[in-house]
Length: 110
Image (spheres, helix red, strand yellow):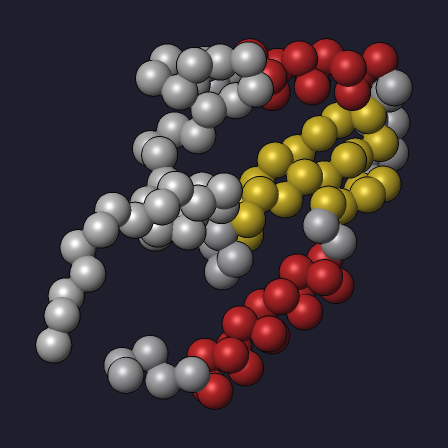
């Protein structure tokens, strides 16, 4: 029985060998350069609040604990009524139900 120890040819697919770079290179940026820092979240939220006031709206940010997902409510500043919820409440309930059903179908201990 012979064992072939020739080098593995390079592949055009980056994940073909199961290895991925820690920080994939963006076009125009060398692969060894770290990615740019993330923007300041507090500053972004403050900017969004400023824009929403221009349209006579308030933004309310919360986290759906069951889904681990951010929920944004657009509220009319005059009436305090929710104009829009992103994602919609009904869709959140569907996601929660799907997770429950998947949990019943899949044995997490296995």
